[in-house]
Length: 143
Image (cartoon, rainbow, N blue to C red):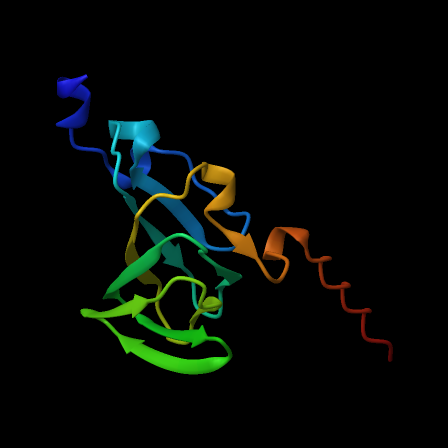
């Protein structure tokens, strides 16, 4: 157990979760290293990509933007975050992340304390991009 708790875990060592949008990876967590107080990970968003609105009833979220530009909607109030800046997202605050820049954004997040059970940790308040219908193809131009 102690060996597992001390091993480095990389972004690509864990599966991608795209359900809420972006390429989200839970990196240091109970399932990967046996953490007991919280977890951390990272999300990569392409330009104009978003993470759907949700909130955490048990945890505070600490967000650090390593690269890019994000708009974080906190209970519908926009907060703009530049690279190498951090933000606290208090528990029960609805939040959505939107890449408003022209390049990929990479945000690192940490949540603690853990919810009593993993399925209680996130409450979705809007569907993620995977649940949204695809845009209809454009009709070919006629002459």
